[in-house]
Length: 346
Image (tube, rainbow, N blue to C red; front, side):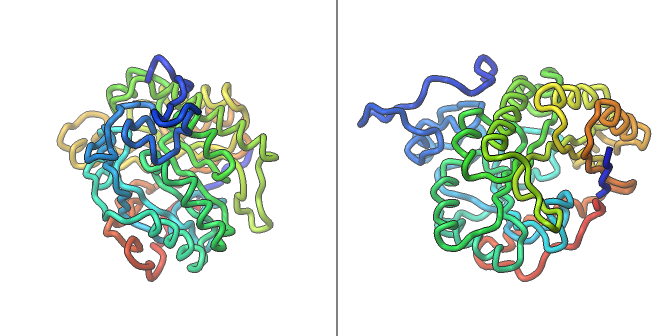
């Protein structure tokens, strides 16, 4: 063991393929043409985002970004010493009541930009020394990614693409991104459908996340497996994240069981950085407090007992609002000046 500090009826996402009425062949899920009947995420809300509508996620038809800058707060194989080139996308398919990024996830904060600007941002972050391009919560904008990533590659992008996701992804979306995404940095939030419904308004989350994770593993295996460079940075692979919630250790243990039973000994990141937002503090109860040391140790011990050999974990004092970057549109319209200071994970 190495501990490094630092729709419900179709959970697999294999519904009938979408078709364009002007042609007979199936249309890829991640095509701009599908935005008139959006099914990019497992909610499959069918919003007409191409003509002024908004999905359940809150996204409309024009790309919206909240921040693009070097980020030193990810797991060591992602941030390294130079930082990860994070691009924070506005909106989110989930509705987590405790969300620490609520300004952009449910508040939909950000600036509208053309797709070409996304390509430029990737190249700017590489020029700033980023170890990778880290696409944070891009699910609702994934129809833009195939063209944008290929365009950036054609113009000189050489660093890995990290897909930083809640885990609430369709299997066919993961498959379509399989040749473009190098590192899957995915959450596995809940094992209980009831808890997922209560806290994130998606009862099908556990089944969806497990199916998506299995597809991520298949994509990495197809491409030759996990790879690190000489500096210990992940060039290809998966890291599964889990945020321990106060009062819900039993569910955390079941999450680890599901990960192990689904994909085996994959690198995991067990986090204790839960910080009550204003809504949770007003509401009171378990989610109005931090995770205790005892709760966190129970989860880490269970990961040890299962046999996970690579686990990233956080030292005490992790609960701090500094874990959340300032969503101030840094880097969205012009390159960021300097990276954000490192957080307490090492």
